[in-house]
Each structure stands twice: as C-alpha cells, then as structure tokens.
Amino acid sequence: MAARRVGMGVPRRDLLMLAACFGVFIGLGGLVAYFGENLETGLGPYSLPGSRKPTDPGPMMEMGPFNVNLTDGEQPRFMRTTLVVEFDKVASLKEAKLRQSAVHSAISAALATTSYQAARSYTGKSAMRTKLVDEMNRTMPNQGVRAVYFRDLIME
Image 1 (cartoon, rainbow, N blue to C red):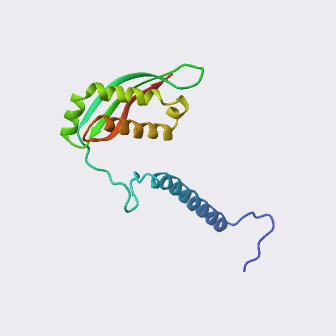
Image 2 (image 1 turned 135 degrees about the vertical axis):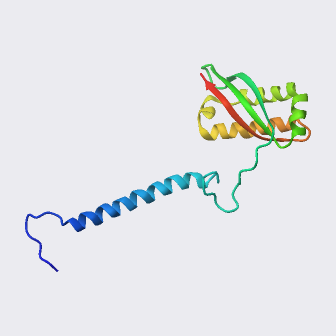
Image 3 (image 1 turned 90 degrees about the vertical axis):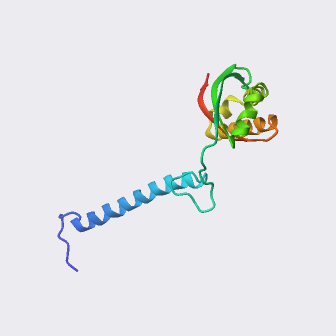
C-alpha cells in the first residue's frame, strides 16, 4: 500500500468511485420513484403480471357540459365539466342515447354530491369517476358503461 503524501488531497481513483456510487444511487432512486408510482395501478410501461391490461376502446359519447354546485360548507363553489363516456358495445351507446335525460340527471346528481376538497385531489377524481360509472349503470338496464373520462374540469 502506497503512503499518501500530506497535502495532496483525495486521489482521483477515490473520486471516480464516489461519483460512480452516487450516480448508481440516484439512478436507482429515480427508477423506484417512477415504477413504484405505476405499480399500484398497473398502468406503467411495464405492468406486473396479472394487473389490468389496456383493452381496445369501446364506443364513446361526449356528454355535457355540466354546471354544478359543489358541497363545501358556507362558501359557494362551482364545477363545470364535460365528460366522455366509454361503453362496452354499440348497443349500450344506443341505449344511453335513448335514456339521455335519465343519464344526464344521474350525472348531475352524482357530481353535485362531490365536495370541493375531494374534487381537487387525484383520489377524489378517481372516486368521482367510479361513482359516475355506477350511477350511469343504474339508469341503464344492460349496465354497459365501461369508463368515464373528464374532457374539461373547471372548479371555482
């Protein structure tokens, strides 16, 4: 082992090893942050086996705009949104068009029971989508609504 000279500083080899370890550490942290976020939903570029796989989109229909008052205690809050509804088959789309008034009423009622705080968060929007799908399926006999997407969502 070679003796170090006093006042020469850190050898170049040690600095390179330190930089390489730091780079690996940062890289692994970034991978964990990216894939850890997407492993829950299974929607990342590399999903876990058995997780939800993307399917071909079904027939879609735009609905709205909906203007509703949000429940937020004393302060009045408003939300304006336009939805895109995905159906499992064309027959479900035709049924929704026949029952358009009932479907619009169910959507308005479901949106009006949402609080402002819930509508602001990602989990609240996700719960709102699930609630909308459930309410729309209650109004249709074949329960053909697959998903609901927010095209516009403005809150005041």
